[in-house]
Amino acid sequence: MSRILIVEDEQHLAQGLRFNLAADDHDVEMVDTGEAALERLLSNPTRFDLVILDVMLPGITGFAVVADLRRAGQFLPVLMLTARGRAEDVLQGFQSGADDYLPKPFELPILMARVRGLLRRREWFQLGLDRQPSAPTVASRFTFRERTIDFEQLEVRMGDKAMPLTLMEASLLRYLVEHEGRPVSRKTILEKVWGVREDTDTRAIDNFIVRLRRYLEDEPARPRHVQTVRGVGYRFVADPD
Ligand code: CA
Image 1 (tube, rainbow, N blue to C red):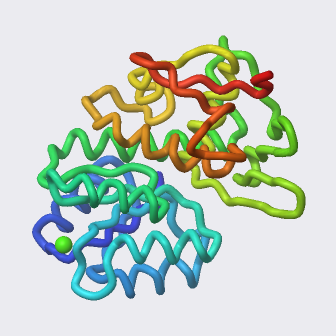
Image 2 (cartoon, helix red, strand yellow):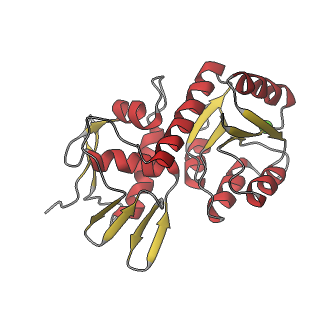
């Protein structure tokens, strides 16, 4: 059983979500403003395992909520509900620190699959089992050049600077590092990292890559470690020379 906070001002939708998540054995709480969400989340950092966050709320937006959470050092998974066809919503959501997004209106089974994917990922991290049985294992830390990725602390360190990673950023990075030197496709990343098989917009992955490059590259616009493999996906190279 996981504890999920729903932040949604459309009562009908919020009730439907609660009903279905409760039927899936989750403990669900609901609030209808971003302010109320922050109050609950910041007053008790371990109370929830996942947040389902609407973007358009009566007071502060979902973007502001997730940005505040991350600034406060809370990195629990956040699934954002965005308006359909608004690419800028998706981009802004990921820039704010969301882990996944779903455009409204959505199919309930897809939402449930996303929730399961995010929760499974969180459990793997907590158990330290975040890897495929056949894949080479990566220790909790990985150092290359002058950077250290700490998969347990969820941060990238460089000198005395530490950059926090969200759960999904760390998951994606770990997957790339485990397959160092080999190209991995966007489809494989969606399945293995997000745990979903539906047609998720691949921009989600591309946006995560843009963020990872900010942490890992000296010149993010000219990436050397997180390389694009044209027509396939991405490849991590620790030592490109
Ligand atoms: Ca709304």
